[in-house]
Amino acid sequence: MGLAGLEKEYDAVLSGLPGSRDIVGDPFGRSLDVVSDAQAEQGQSIVSTIDEDIQYAAEQTLKKVVEDFKAKRAMAVVMEPATGEVLAMANAPLFDTGNFGQVDEQLRRNSVIVDQYEPGSTFKIVTMAAALEAGLVTPETRLRLKPTIRVWDRTVRESHRDQPAVRDWSVTQILAQSSNVGTVMIAQQVGEEGLEQMIRRFGFVQKTDIDFPGEAAGLMPPLEEWSGSTIGNIPIGQGISVTPLQLATAYAVIANNGVYVKPHLVRTSNRRSGERSVVSPEVAGQLKRMLRAVVQEGTGQAAAIEGYAVAGKTGTAQKIDPETRRYSSTLFLSSFAGMIPVEAPRLVVLVVVDEPTVAYYGSSVAAPAFAEIADFALKHLEIPPSTGELSSTSTGG
Image (cartoon, rainbow, N blue to C red):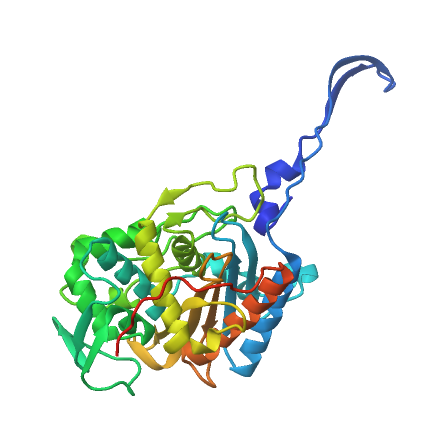
């Protein structure tokens, strides 16, 4: 009987059915007649989408990240955006799978699917998508940013304090430099209803229905419970919880020209199940170019891979201190989500590092790990180097 993971999910398929035979016997135990005879049915085989080489490489990278940055744990997902196939789903610290029953439950958890966290700046693509889809801004639209912005009873500050006090930045620059102030200004144009609808269109706050037990749905307050300051925190990835799988799937939507494909771990004849449109191909193209700018000139430069055009977004999220119930100044989640090659994305890769202590910015912790995993996967799958960029978008400034 399957105890966990795919073996538990597909237990009925793998196990088959036992045979049975009813006989009439005499008092001495001798068979006199066969009343019924049901043949046993052999269990069926399943084929996992996991690529064992990419899985191993991802695990080894995460193991090193946890050791180098003295982190609590780390997670990674590698997906094919066009098919929804998950090629790697890794967690660290590692454990001996041959001794599964004796391993601590926390280590056995597939955190990519069952755990929720506040995503931080990697979530800003949702705010940008809502504004672009509604025609409120273009990637070239310029906004005048101040060091802070007041939203009801909350003051939103920039996470990177080395930015100029007053800036005249394009929307692309706002994403590339991960400006909290600029993102909130754009969210205010979108409005609460528009933002909430886009969050749900991307598939957050509901299960992806991946074929793996124990999936979490994510958390967001109902729209009627949003306070005056909610529009100042959810747009920048605070006050909402997602799973790593949900976030990777959202980036796969952008990579797949705005189309959502349900992620899965077992190969089926229907390789594009659950397909639906989230944003237009035009908006998906704009977002790809904007995410490309993040790696070219913004916070994600450490995610660059020689010979390939990489697009993605860094995230550095404060965690809630379990004692004070307030955002901690020492506990962080560092992440990077990206796609390669950007002109025709074949892979989406997400790396999340929980509570790194040596450094904590996504740009210095998660982005290099993304590059290492993605570089191996590209070469292993023999994906040719980039032959050209997407049409350029001015970032101004």
